[in-house]
Length: 255
Length: 327
Image (cartoon, rainbow over all chains, first blue to last red; front, side, top):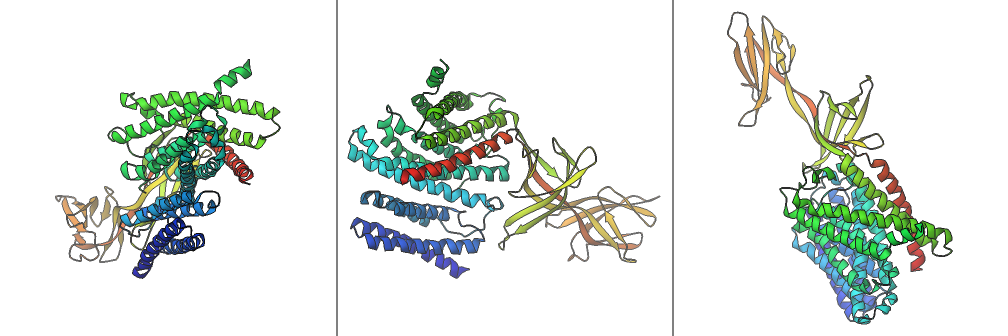
């Protein structure tokens, strides 16, 4: 048990170092070496999740350390998928975000605990990664929007040149819709209600409405100039939903 | 004229602004609820009656939310109707229109279901034991058994219980419930959801040393022993956390005698009593299953199931549409 826990400690450190190396290598335009670092990050992440799944006898998405590591991994994978469609600076910014999530895991004392009875259902482990995947797509959309501010400099006509933002939002929206559906089914089975007045659930509804609303903005000529600022604000809303509600409210979702 | 009305009500710019107002409204509600924990219990089900019984100034955000959500819903319904009208004439972009129609229909249905459930649904708590408990719309429910499993560190893994549901006509069924596995009735509109369970000691089995005869002692159910009668008064926990049974021994022409017995195999000097010149020893506890459950009634389940189906179709179409856009 303690040996496996040591391997977990090593794998999370190694994964974080590999991610940091990928950031540095990308800064120096060493693309193939950065790719190798990201592959190493993925391998160490698989070891991390694999051992935790074995020790917990369940899917490893049930505590803060696992949540932040999952987010880090999904942001990284999202970046790898869209690497050829975004600039190197955008890619580095996204990796920095993934690195920040990975580094956050070191803030918490890592006690491996078995999941509570409520979490032991298939709906929970598919609900969590789907919502984190949506965050990853939306973070990339936000980063793409932030970098567009400098490029556009107030010329709203150029926004049509940023179809990637909408495309990323659509992908995120699909994942988040599925996450909401799975979460709703789980809620009905576990607590008899698909919606509860809980800060995390309320902010998830906010996020779904917000990004769903933004999907319409390309077809609204009067509001198109707000597209980039609104996508930038979206990143703040994700942070409130993911971190804010988990740590600064009375939410039952403590991750 | 009708088309023009639909066009005005379903103005997309207005819809966009209304959606942002709803979002701000929800965020304000989240802050108000977090700042007033004495008014808003954490993690409570969607019960709109809570905000009206009584109406309070602190619920201002919800009253405004109902108005803004109402306006937003009108806008969406008009958009929905307009999209269907456009679908009849559109030769291109039909997939996009279909995606919008399905996702918006799912949202409208969900909102309608929330309002219906919020005002007409209800929740309750019950403790089920072998004695039947009447639950509205379900029947007389009793717990037949309860069993918990634990992780190697002793933490709870799952609890499952078998319930017996008896109907007024005499028929009965058995249902198994566990965490994340509720018992559902009337197409899921009524639910019994487990919240915990254990076997609770209610009585004690005594063994007579002279002939090995056993006596099942339940509270206030006297047993005839020789020329007297023995009654279990109750079971209590001592300061040392040992269970103690209290008995009363009654015999004609004698004062009632109060007797105590430690209900523990290891306490050999104290786990027996003497009545009628005979020793009665502790054999085992009599335990009954006790299950804590939540009962839910949500009349909007058929609407939400329809909404779920429509949302799944809309999401599948959206995945297909996203693929055509990315390629």
